[in-house]
Length: 88
Image (cartoon, rainbow, N blue to C red; front, side, top):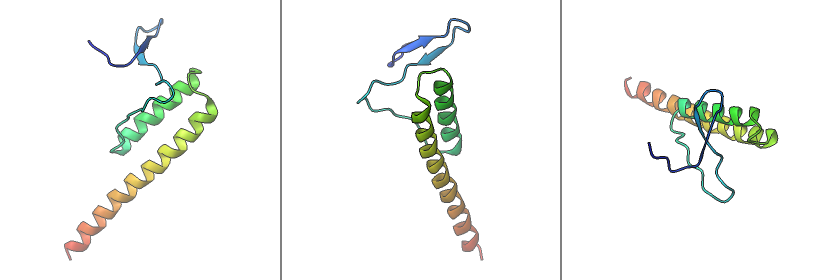
């Protein structure tokens, strides 16, 4: 299995985890759905709990992710309303 990103192996479970990207390196995460946003929040939480990410930084990132989630939800509701109004 080839991995483009550096990883760390958990000694207890043997699971691989991506290391956080170096400063100045663009981080990409799929955020097209509420499920994607949820997974990214979970990752931020785990990194904060593990000491990989500073708690203050994680708080800011989760705040932004919540805003992204609200936009996704609003967009979904907007499409549903347009569909209902079109059926009248």
